[in-house]
Structures are given as C-alpha cells and as structure tokens.
Length: 329
Image 1 (cartoon, helix red, strand yellow):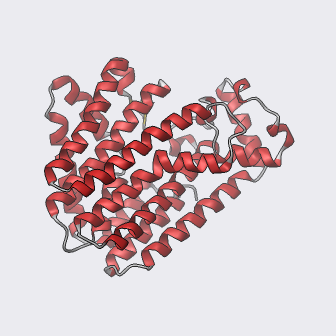
Image 2: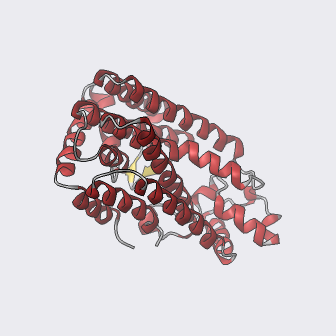
Image 3: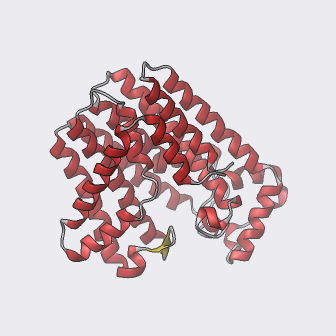
C-alpha cells in the first residue's frame, strides 16, 4: 500500500507544473482566511485547516478545471471553499462523536469544548461561501450549497440509522452519497465551471467526482474493519462502536446467521469491536465491498474518457480514481 502523500505526489506530477503552484496558493489563502477572525477562532480554525491532510478535494477542483482557460480568481476561491466546507464538517463531526483526536491531533472539541468547536465549524462554513460569493459565480455558490445541504441531510440520516443493523444497502449508499460523494461532485463541478465548460461537461465531471467519492467512503468503511491502525489512525471497529452500520456489516449479516441476529449495542469495548471485525472479515464481506468500490471507480474512469480533455488532465483524473482504490490495496 503506497502512502497517501506518494499517491497525491504522483497525481500532481502527471497533472503538470501549474498544479503545485496553484495548490500552494490555495494553501496560502486557507491560512490567510483562518487568521482573519480573532486570535481564539483563528487558532482553532487554523489548526483544523493545517491538519486537513491530502487536500484531495481542492486538487479535484484544479484538475477538473484543466490546464487552460480557467478564471483563476474563481478557481482558487472554489478550491479554498471546498476545503473549508470539508474542514467545517470534520469539526462538527468531532462534536457529535465526542472525538478527542483526528489524524493524531487533538480536536477543537477536546481542547476548547462544544461551543467553541461549533463556532469554529460555523466560521469555516461561512468563510467558504463568502469566498465563492466574492469570486462572483452564482452557479458555483449553488453547487456548493447543494453539497452542504446534502452533508447535513446525510448526517441526520446517519444519526437516525445508528445501531440499526437492518439498514438496507440502498439506504447506506444514499447516506454515503450525501455525506461524502456530493462534496466530491461539487469539487469537480466548481472546477469545470471556473473553466467555463459546457453544461454536459460540468455534469460528466460532477458524476466522476460523485462516483469516486462514493468509492472513497465504501473503502473507508472497509478500512475501519480491516485497516491497520497505523494507516487509518484509529482502532479497528471504531465506527461499529459508535453504532454506525456500514456496508461490510450489512453484507456480512446476509452471509452469517449469527451476525444477522446480533445486537450492535452489545459491542461496547475495543476488544469486542475487533472480534466483530474478524467475524465480518471471515464472511468475505470485505471483498464484496471492495468489488463494489472498484466497479464505481471503473465507471468514474469511463466518465472521464467520454470527455474531450487534455491528455495530462485525463491521466491525472484517472490517477485520482485509482488512488481511491489503492487506499485499501
């Protein structure tokens, strides 16, 4: 399994020399935005942004725009805005989950409490839309607004479904689409809009983003069951302990009568969660989940191949799709 940084580095190298410079400018803008709202909020917003990881969503904005013809002001604003929304959702998720660490770093909730964490997340959301509005694209604001509404709806569905092991595959996939895939979709749409691509291209690139976002979440849920702690940054079965029913458990219940009869609320310790992960893995449900994700990635690559794109742009987007799969290889 190659590291996330290595995978992103390979994508950037293929995409062309302009991408590292643009990513650096996005990073500078994110830092500038975090500093602009007083020392307390700036400290926590800045720490959240700094711990943001691979910047996959801003990278998708830049790659969907392509090497030429994009409105640079709008492009950079869109890339920053997508990452701000993503960061805001992480802060709010940590409040809802009472999470003390994220990527090995203390969360805003654990350091400053519930009220400060909610305010920090709200600030990040508001700055995202202020950034896009200043860039002057109403359609871009609409695209990000749709994704943000989907994020909230997905979170509500996840809370409604907590501990319910009878959740269907279809409802699970819809929840993942709302919570994860729609922001990937918006990132690609925003990039395409900044490059003034026609409506059909915007939709096709958005579909690409939605498919890889869904595959990303499926494989994230596979990693929660099977991934080593050194890769996933948390104990195996953390989602199960929180009552979050994911595809591996749904599929495993169809294969193992003992799992079909279980009450997830009886899993209360990390050791019990690991034992449940082992039982899920023994059914072959992880391979079935990975196969679904691989099929989505193949469909995403077909979306890209249907478009008239520069060769570097097409190759970089396909590498993004393949990198999603590589996370669980």
